[in-house]
Image (cartoon, rainbow, N blue to C red; front, side, top):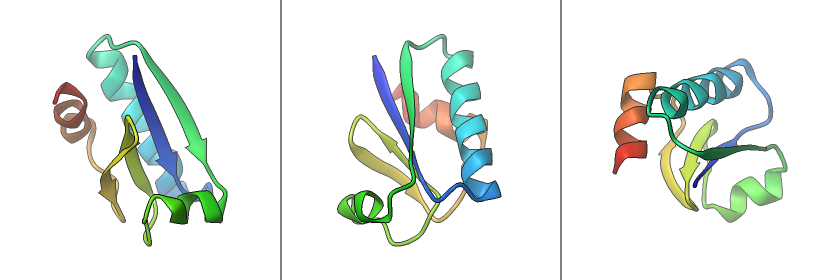
Length: 78
């Protein structure tokens, strides 16, 4: 099961990233858990300075931007 985390405070970009990640995981028919991380201290513990950020299985895959569904599908397929 993929563990997908969205790091951000709940801004529109963070919500869009969560939607894109969900769409990518569904398109790939993955079993996944999607978690939104809004606590600033926890976000900083990932070493992320710009949100939103995408974390897959504990590894930061994108930060400071909203990757497209297609880009996220490539990340999840790695």
